[in-house]
Structures are given as structure tokens and as C-alpha cells.
Image 1 (cartoon, rainbow, N blue to C red):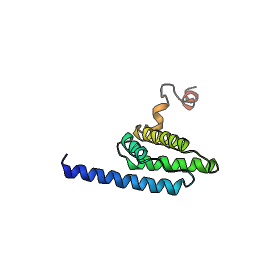
Image 2: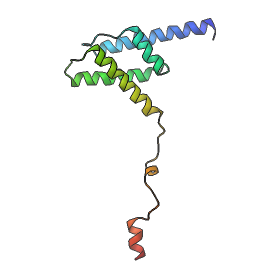
Image 3: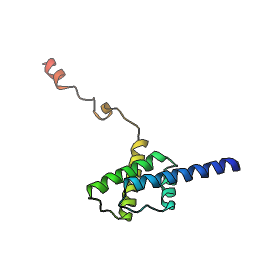
Length: 116
């Protein structure tokens, strides 16, 4: 990695953190904004995937609404982390067809009736 690429990566991360901070303030106005380090930690945890953190903040906003606007910063950060982790795991799982779970060993009821 060249110094120019490193500078570009740092600048991009700073822009992501600034955007996430603004989104947090907009979505969760009654909860104070987490530290810059928390946003950077989330980005690092999820390979700098911006969409995962956005999803977590959105889900935290829904939870805040269900709780009537009362949520501590600690609760909000933990809930957001949980949502991000769940979303990331769900996206990483392969989408299996539904017939994968239906055993095709036994013949169907209709086939049994027809053979009688």
C-alpha cells in the first residue's frame, strides 16, 4: 500500500464515521452519540462494510421507538452491535432451497393410494 492509498483509506473512513454520526443523531435524537472509536470499532468488526452498521443503527432506532424514547447509550450500543452481528451472519449464510429440508425418501400419500 502506498502512502497515497493509505491517506485515501483514512479519509474514506473519516467520511464514513462522519456520516454514521449524522445518521445516529438523526435516527436516535434522544440518545447521545457514541464515540468516534465505537464507530471505528464497528467498521473494523465488519470489514468496513458501511451497510451493516447502517442496518444496526436503523434497528436500534426501531427499538428506541418501541421503548418510548428511553434508552441509555450503553443499551443502544449493545443492541446496535447485536443487530449488526445478526445481519452480518444472515448475509453470510448460503441461501438453501426449501426442498433441501424435505426428505424425499418416503413416497407421498397420493402414490401410496394409487398403488392400492
